[in-house]
Length: 466
Ligand code: 4AD
Ligand code: MG
Picture 1 (tube, rainbow, N blue to C red):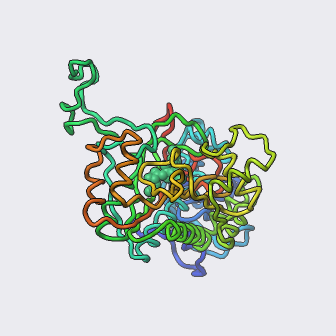
Picture 2: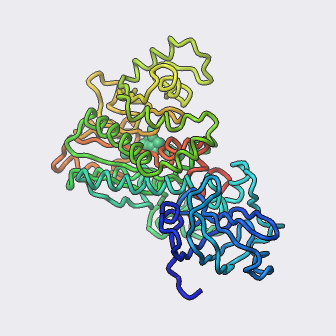
């Protein structure tokens, strides 16, 4: 075909430019028809809907039309016409078809019938070509863009935290080691341990679990910053809400206390959900239909309209203990809350998102600001319907002596965090921040139920294919 400027299917489906010549390129989702006429459903990823291409068999070489199979990639030049068919407003009368690549129906794994999500995980290289994953990927993109837009519009600066780190201070989870040492004959210390001073960085290094500590350094100069990058946790938790590699958004704000932090988290989440409703409605409508409960869009609207319930961990534990529920994990003051407890509070007790604060210091990180009671910290977790924890954050301990006391109590070597401590020595400032798990957000917004289905290529225990 002589020209390569193609028309985007999303645009054509809205067009009324009947009679004009168009060029469309995409993948065939289905072909039906008879010996006189073929109907080809074409998708180019720009929108969930397919464009109907009508090919009169007599106008084409029959061998060419045989190559136009489900899964094949084609270019079609033709005329845009008003469609008489059900379910579409326009179609293209094909004049010319070029087959870029056919797909052998014997071996092409995606059939036109509906496939299970578990099967699709095994063919994650092809699953973007399904309606569900097309929708998820478009929404994922829109949310990433909306996150940057939100912070840019609110005067925040995007900070790139390192992915390789020499510090294990966060204590958020087991870490993956990064090394270039010979795996057969690593240099050893006299005590038999590996001598990491001979490794690439001259010390032992890991993949980061969080960009927070570096974001704090940025906030102590730029006031309002955020990170948005991949983070890694080597916990062996095979749950529908955990990945070994996931993306996290971590805003960090100088001069914010825990209440400012909660206000920002609530406003931010509502903005993102509204953005999805405003910009991804076709995809959401599709997912809503596909969802078992058909309540996705209602859940999204609920989050926007309700003020999040704010209460303390201690109050939450009292509610949970009085609930009379048979928990898989027993609840007692001092234990960490599990998803079943978080979801009970959100879905059964309050019927809206919940922000819990004032967690026991022993189940939270060293950097969280101590409350006056000496046993709880100014932590906050935001809990969402169907998800449980979607955000974790806190006001930070800005007082050097108080921070040192916590570091010693938790046996964190001072030499590992000397740079972090410096911010408390030089011009320390009250500040706060939080982390939003990007895939947990996408789980919520898409209504998908397994986190492996909202990231293109999930990394989980025993799984790093593709
Ligand atoms: O609660 P977390 O561990 O908090 C932090 O990492 C802090 N440094 C954040 C901060 O204050 N800047 O993790 C934050 C969020 C969780 O609420 C959850 O949404 C998500 O990250 N998350 C995971 N998402 C997918 N897979 C995992 N294994 C996750 N672990 C945490
Ligand atoms: Mg947490």
